[in-house]
Image (tube, rainbow, N blue to C red; front, side, top):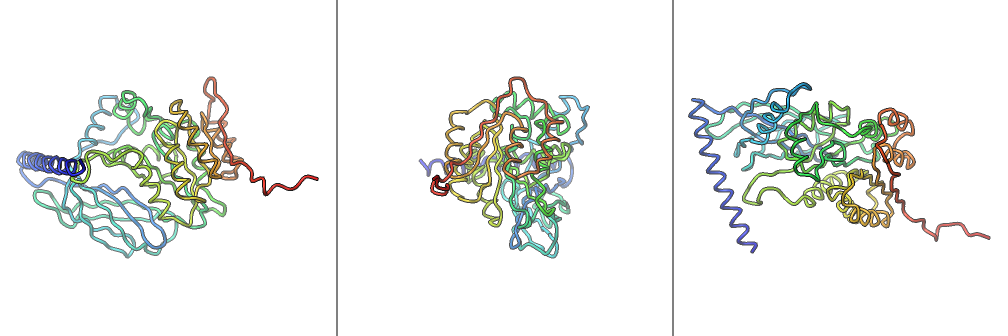
Length: 390
């Protein structure tokens, strides 16, 4: 069965490549010259030894900047333009970070990944530049792009790994129709963040002594939406971080997208393994396997998770509670709350954020009707360590 699946993937990938070649030839004929190309830098992260920066080479797309007043039809056109990307395989990209200069080649879906020794520098965020050194016919060379990647300080104490959909961004991912409407009919200005999430995350960002804690956003949204999500975080004053999204393309190695749980676990483990000097706070929601993913992380990386916070979106509760029991049995506090304020309150009680953040949250967060108290699970005390009585 495995051989048949691999053969099917190979045939479909070849077919897609032939279709892309034909589309390219038709576009070239219509343009009457080389096809313009652009580099999309997705940022990255690193430690004191090695850094990784990701990106993609695509044919240029004319997507106008989003505005708060844009009607739904204009947002729909922008979303379709993002999703209907035309990749450029076999392009050589030179990636420069400080004094380091490496060359990488884009794969069959246009993606590239540059790994390089981390150059000397200060601060959490470092600059990186990508230049299109060479590109196959009929594409136009010379594209340049710049971006940033983060190199956390060990003084940051811990990092934050957060889901995006229905954790930070109101998506309704458990309903395909409502999720599609929010994704396609809105833009970065009109998408909604949950109340108080900006204040909570900003409080998590600052460590004692002023060091800035790193944020990593792991989402099953496609890489095509990278610019929209990055702009959304900026517009809502939510700490920027490394976005780790999902490839929905067809290659000879896989058919469409990888498994949702495997995708999240792969990125979370990669981040934790790259930053072994840091513990992590994990944030998600009850709707898309975050609880079971985080239970697996707690079990496989013992002692590395400070706490788990989940937004209760009203689904998946039996499996969520079972996962929370696994997490607390391993000695890690876990909270399931219906609003941001309840999650932040638990974080303040645990000493992960300053208590003053609760005042800011109280001003920004209106309790929803019928709000219930958060489900807070803390590890059971070790009876052997209790003082004797009498």
